[in-house]
Amino acid sequence: MFEPKFAAARTKTEAIVKIVLAEGAQSQLEIDLRKANFVSITIDSSNHREIKVVLLMVRYFDGENGVQVKLLQLRDLPGEISDHLLKDYVVNVLNHHNLLQKFIEIYSAN
Image (cartoon, rainbow, N blue to C red; front, side, top):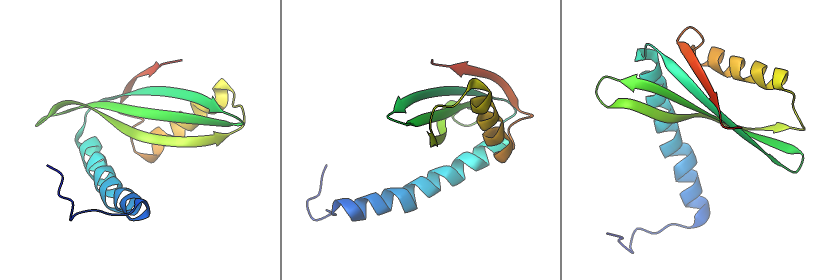
């Protein structure tokens, strides 16, 4: 399964993942979300020293592939943030992706 002649250093592999694969996946997600009628959001966060890492997953129905769960956004937010600021962040992400009108549910893993 693994072909030794197709090897790359960590930095090249990281660039391929970030530039090629991630951008392609993000573009496809944007296309899928434009077609979706409804979306739900799962939010999870954890603290790493003075940084809060916030993960947003989006769940939607795709007519060809059924129910899909994809990474919408993963961000580091500085410092301790209040529930109000976290809510504002989620609303801003939904607005950015034109999902606020399609949004029907949120689930928090905290």
